[in-house]
Length: 452
Ligand SMILES: [Mn+2]
Image (tube, rainbow, N blue to C red; front, side, top):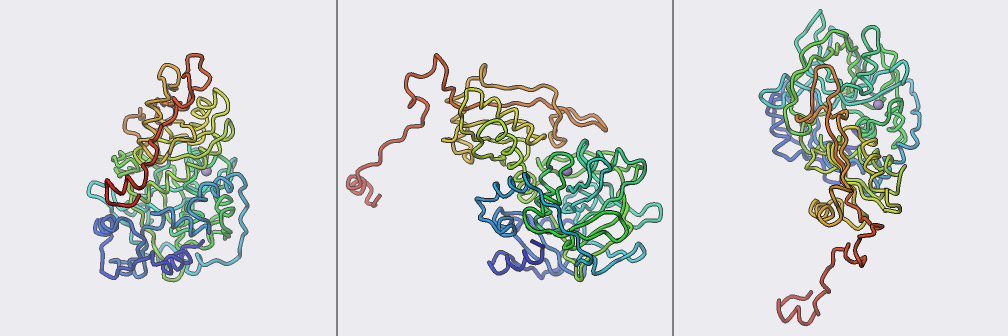
């Protein structure tokens, strides 16, 4: 669903608030968004910006469910289905995102937020970057963009954080010269979700978006690339081979990511809708965590389902919604738990620690998961440790070497019932969490004065 239609639907439900107070995009706006708990909000009066700004788009699962037209509980399966069967998007000749075409001498001043003191600069955090890899085809992914001063005659220049080994980085490394790139701000929600999914290399995120909800594309004005037709703002430009400093920046784990040498993104042209809506997204907070973590649940689910029966997956908030997962399976063979651990790491390359539980354990309840570890897990039998693995760049405890993918150890706990052990329990109920029978209602009333 395009951003404006989503905002209208949200307003109808009373989910959208509007703020008319004048706010400054340097620190003040980020503080305000944070104070308002990232509630879906339209800011009508941002200093230096003549149209609107929206924040909190993906801060609640309910918003995404509304945009996809499914109940919140069906989100995981909708994403799994779209991942299984991407649908190539329709190409249209004219598009809202090209209602206004602005060339380098006429670029609008975007209301790019500076989030926290100590940040390297103002950052675009909601931009979906589209590139084409000569071998793997189109790729769409989030890349944070730090605005740097004008350079080499260009007024709008950023350094782009490209995670090593991911789609954009691979294409940029392979390109003999500058790599054309389009960055979409205020993209349709299907695109915002699909771009966060990181499907296997060669899988087109925009076809996943289109499988979620029809998401037409239009050819960019000055690039041989197609962009979501209903985006609010599109920056057309290229990634250079030259590098500049990017960072520091607060990231998903709420630790500060350090300064790296990253390519420049030079903007040649901006196309946008009339009265374009800029989208803000706070780093390291609720929306960032939901948007990054939730789309990994279906990729883990799909990978685990290849080796056993997966019932559910939860990327837990304690792990920054990125490094930790609980996988719930229906165990049918003795090795399902161990197989699920290996598959979960395949399903989400940045996953560091995973716990596998049986389907009677509530995977959303951290105490229940800990209980499963306490009562069903033996370290010398059920622990999987992987040495020297590719790591998320977001883990400060990993080994970080310049220009290389970070390295880490990984750990999996098979906390499922070890049902075929010859030294196992005498009775199956030894494995269950027993509950007291409910009290007789009359006695309950006598003792508490309340009806049960
Ligand atoms: Mn990709």
